[in-house]
Length: 74
Image (cartoon, rainbow, N blue to C red):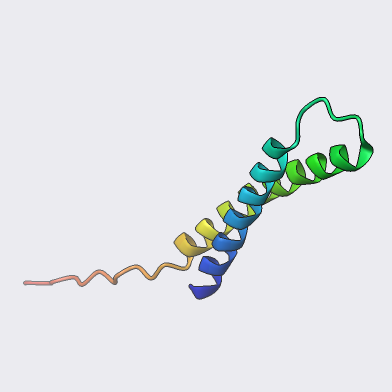
């Protein structure tokens, strides 16, 4: 369960990095380095959404469910 929390935090960090790099660089940049950084930020941000979702799903799948106790009264 601890690993799913770490994966979720990494996914959130990737998403935030992607948002920062995407919105901090203007749209009409002509220098190839800045366009490349913006495209990398877009890719990392979208990948971060997937990694964060995977961490949440791992947490939900590995969550221990309480056992049902059946009372049989005959």
